[in-house]
Length: 113
Length: 412
Image (cartoon, rainbow over all chains, first blue to last red):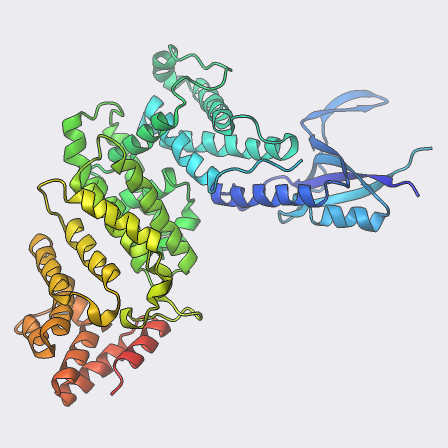
């Protein structure tokens, strides 16, 4: 049974209410992130990255985007490999992408013919 | 592939080094801009490094990012054009960071910043907060928790330091050797304050307090290793810090209750720390000066070297307290001397030290004063007076742990 690939879409609130993390908190975040990366090394196909600003292309042409809806913004993506959606969700659930209040990770199976 | 690990407190300590370095370059009155630039450099580091791994030289990476942020910010401000013209000579390269990127150089700047913020014009409690924020990388909330103060109060203290520095616009490289040595006592004071905040506060978590002590030791170490800071006082200060921290974890039992010196398990004392402290104590005696730090380190050393409580050389302890009193008149030192004399010559002699001594209101109302009196009177057989003092002491205990300790100590 081949493993399936999943696209993880990371969203966060536009502005962080609580201000910036302090250096001490960053230390913890960094350590946590690396621990997570090691734990799920086998699942992570592509660490993806942060998404910058861009344009939205529609039949009418291109406009500056991304469009911010419901105060959420897609901030990054990542591709993981797993046996099932449950396993992929497990990887996402422990990821730093959901560490901050108001942030979320959407996990979608990538179906290829 | 495992992620390469960073040294402990990399972000916090790097923050202090970068802020000091950049503030030295563009002027300490711009510290706030510098801090913002360093903060956002660290945020981008967090994003980049977690995804693509650590760069070869994380420090240089951060420096470049912070410097670019800062220069970008300053370029956008026309009223800062003058600084830019002065800075124009400094090419913001994209190489591996500037040539001055040597650990020694960085530490010079950290120390320079410390000397600059220890200006007489800034109240000591503001100096302390400023140092914690800019040199140790704690944010306001973290400082408030550690100093047991409100965030508003920390902001106020920080603001005072910043506005004074803006007015003073100290020349970062303008401190001559002579000025440095004149300012050394103020630097000692702020480091001592930082240490005692960690060591004596009974209000914060042990781990948090320990952090303050570690920071104080780290900065004092830098000072002791540097020509501008090498003095007998610096060595004595570092010695007393080591001798206290070595015994810190033995001061509490498993449940966080406080333990008396005589109850402490001396096997828990960190012998390496004690050796380190004694090493610095020996070094502090190489000059011809004797400071309060020498006296305090001497007292701590006596306790560290005693095989058990009963074998403490109380005569030496009492003598050190007397020397300490001559240097810094504080009723607390007198009280401590009375305790040492009581152990050495008996409770009656101890009480005699306090005879006719009017404690200031803050001390008279503190549990410490009443507890010592209760103990000494009890040992002299003055049971009525002992009982009265015991009541007062128990009533004025600041925390349940202290109260519990007093009940144990002052059993009738």
